[in-house]
Image 1 (tube, rainbow, N blue to C red):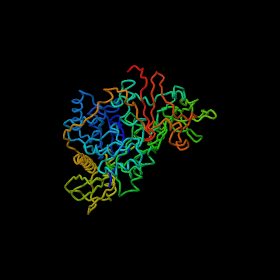
Image 2 (tube, helix red, strand yellow):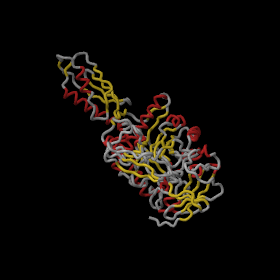
Image 3 (cartoon, rainbow, N blue to C red):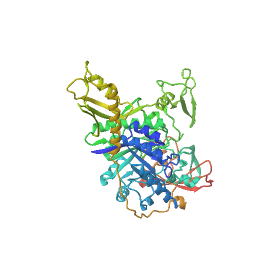
Image 4 (cartoon, rainbow, N blue to C red):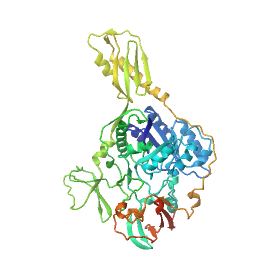
Amino acid sequence: MRSIELLAPAKTADIGIEAIKHGADAVYIGATSHGARAAAGNSVEDIARLVRFAHLYKAKVYVTVNTVILPGEMPKVEKLIQDLHDIDVDALIVQDMQLLSLRLPPIPLHASTQMDNRTVEKVKMLECLGYRQVVLARELSIAEIAEIHRECPHTKLEVFVHGALCVCLSGRCNASEALFGRSANRGECAQVCRMAFDLKADGKPILKDKHLLSLRDNNQIDNLEQLLLAGASSLKIEGRLKDVTYVKNVTAAYSKALDEVIARHPKEFCRSSSGHVHLKFQPDVRKSFNRGFVKDTNKPDANLDTPKAMGEPVTRNTLLHNGDGLCYLDHGKLQGFSISNADTFRPAPHVQYYRNQDIEWDKMLVKPSSERRIYTDIHLYEDHITMIDEDGLTAQVAFENNFELARTHQKENIQRQLSKLGETVFEARQVTIHFKKNYFIPSSMLTSWRRTLSDALATERMKFYPLERQVHEPISVEVPKPYELTHDASVPVMICRYCIRRQLGICLKEKKEEAGVGRRTVPNLKGEELTLSLANGASFRLAFDCKNCMMEVYLASPSISKQ
């Protein structure tokens, strides 16, 4: 049976706690430095607080140390890793193979998607180097994931299932560094791909001021079963910069969908953590920030008009509220406003509106919106009481039986008092009384037993948490100099599976109706050189590897002052 984890993002420890409450089996979070989201750093103390909470549910905490490490930074990184090991972090997500040369503490390593993990050969190499889990490239098809799993059956495969898609192969984007000196591989991406470009063919304008590299978001919620059958064991939600309402909603939606898949395959898959989620709302991924969705990340498409979230289409059945945010496209430009009075709002004719903020939905998710409980069975005997949780761990309290006989039936009161576990992580699934006589037991004593059992069982869960450890022997791995140190003009600033030709319906391999995503009437360009340019003067040359369906982007004229 394969253990499956739903892996959720955590900008902060508090958001990580909410992710676990809403169904995450694991969370990933950035530390004080060297995470691929520099704006999402956390202290070791805060991460330790998240670890303590997560481990109660057998949920895991992974910390990102997934940037390129520059000369002179290794001692700082080495100390950070030791600190993270000391607070029982479950694994590190890393990019730079130079880390393998350090005397690392026995903490498992996961290979970040920033390492460009796309092939069987790459995953086999990482497996040989000791990486326990490999975060696959977002661009892989289900068939490619299945092939990697067949060839590397003992390596856990982590697959992105939801959130933002980079237009570039992960770890192969140098555009932000080339233009602004802000390296995506150092956690400082300036999101060049979300900017507006002009497209030119042999210098002649074709399209103007369009977001030609801004991909729609990933959404695999309907493909979870296929991904599990292909070999995925970790399902990852993108979003370490997202707020708590996003994480609550998307995590809950995927947890619910994953439970449904596992229910159809009870002998093949199980959840990797413990506990049962009780939601106070109906999750809906369409309600959270998204740029529109793609289901085939192998052939993604872009929203040429805007890189922003448009939200859900407004129909005549949409119930609007005062304060809702609406937007619409006006000659290819996104316009937005908020509704001051929903009762008097009248849509303009022939305009499709979208709601990008549902004020009532946001208010609901700011409040406590889920509880996660670990099921327990309580057994009360003549001289002791036990509490057994769903993982088989036990706590016990012994006592002297000097109880008086009761005049009235006591069973229901005893069961009710012992079931009051609401202030703990536990929920009483069953309370069984093994008395031969009808004893009277004061409610204060029942309360004392209940609290003692809950505290003891929580301690037991932490004591027997199955913390994985992995011994590392320092090895030397040859690593080429990063682009950040060379700025080699012959290196593409982007390598993409996304193709502008396909996006515009002028793919040289596919017929337009097969390409399917073209929304503009453009010339059927064949031999012309295509270039992209930004309003600030930077231009890029496009090269197409049609055999392998890849697009390369080269910096033609930087003329940008680095910030």
